[in-house]
Length: 526
Figure 1 (spheres, one colour):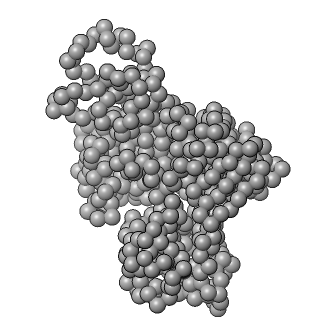
Figure 2: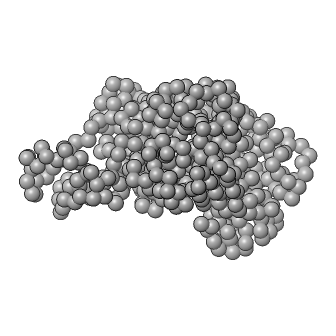
Figure 3: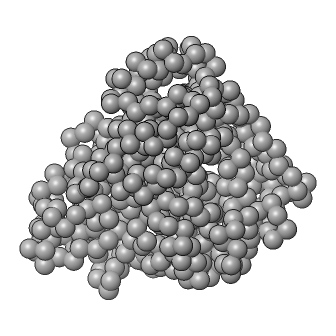
């Protein structure tokens, strides 16, 4: 036994826990999910010690997750490689729930690392043909992207199994924890990561369910978008795209901003306001006029309406600084938008009892999120940025951040989905006209098609044509090979190649190809 902090995968708890380690019996019972130990509160150990002796094999059955009144100990995820689904799958495995899953990208090289990581946790991965659903399956979990014609759904219906939406599963998890839900059109993944890392640094031992991998967790050998801590705190990213976040009743929520994305602003306001009303405590961005009428426990921002506001801020070429009550918070991320993100995270963490000096250290050590403005400098002195930006407001923020260190932007954007592209077409055109300068270039890749039923009545070429005569170079390219050929003659030392897009797991490979084309990595800015 050991009293202290467990540094293994999945758990990082307070010393109020006692750890019971497995010793030389893994061949009989399997390696524990926590990679070597289980954790019990001291008060719960007393009865256990009256029963067991040294050498006794102990199996502690995890409690089921309750979804719609159904006790679930064995859950099948259809589309398990998706960021939201894989996060739920990992979190439940950390809790001891049996997990299986399928994905249409089962054989794709782009998802092989996710598959390996899930299998290492004990998840059974199957083809999306219904074969992963058996007599032990309690429920099948799907996302909005899964259509009714999917073979897994047919197998579940034939077996009389309930089919639930991922939001219902997340809502059930949220009820079991003291949950902090992060919502808003832009910045959710980054602020979710900030709150999680800051609370962790302040020894609050939170859990995490996020929509993007954290670099710090990836270094620990995890996928990075889920973690199981030792306290009752849980930080979740609450996605608004399909309207399901109204199902959540968290202990605390934070609303970052509202702009047109997936839905009109009016619809989004209703969703976000509902979330705040269902939260015991809430914080909203006082600088966003679309949130002005919301009732909340806390407001953050720069203006007089903000209850939590900095004394002053500094926007540096490679980072941002925020000063409040004599404390300097130096965040190693680019862009003005990250000042807003930092304010949101800090006011939430202060509410949960974090010490400001510990917070300052945590901010300085923040490692960020995968594909959120990841900067590399090549041997040819070209900046290559990989960013998840996928709507006009996020593209604007990314271009603005890139101008902090490069005078010329060569933007590469892959629109995701025909429906979203059609919905945001006018906003794309207005944004592109306003943010790019005469010396810049804009290349649009073909619209990413994720499969399923879609009306393919819009193309990247339609957007370029609608732009009309603009001062900057703008064109649609038919393939990634054509893109690289164009970049070869267009990009010069000091330029920034800004690659933007979402959902497509092959985008990191495109960024890698561009980096290698320009000589490979010279430097990854800290």
